[in-house]
Image (cartoon, rainbow, N blue to C red; front, side, top):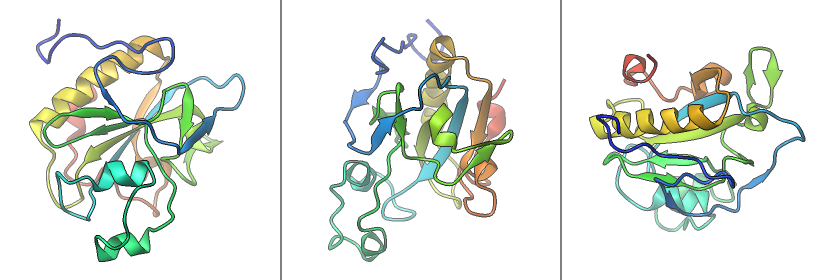
Length: 182
């Protein structure tokens, strides 16, 4: 057991035993023979810059009501997901099996390879560019990375901004990489 808590494990079906499961329909099969070698860290809040509500879960499960907030009208019909979402409290939610391709990276490129969704796992942190993340989030993220690295040959951990420069800014300037990558 680590100081952050008991060790988590990824099951044979790609679901993590330490996460609350909320299945998203927004995923598909990875290309045959694809090896998962990349973790992509994101930040999201819905409504923008607000935390704790159901917006992110509703977005990833196609249940976001555009009448609930003006911004939701702008993203109505968007079909996205991530494998994991870490709330400010440190709660971990899994939306897509790690064995499936979640729709988190969009147009992206890493180390000369296009379509990062094919070979990556997406981890969303509840946050924004304007505020630092919570210690509980870093603890959960560290435990998650340990479990994923134990199960998959992860070579790199990057931000969404690294694979989609100029298009994305997350996880943002307040993300403390020194608390994650050792």
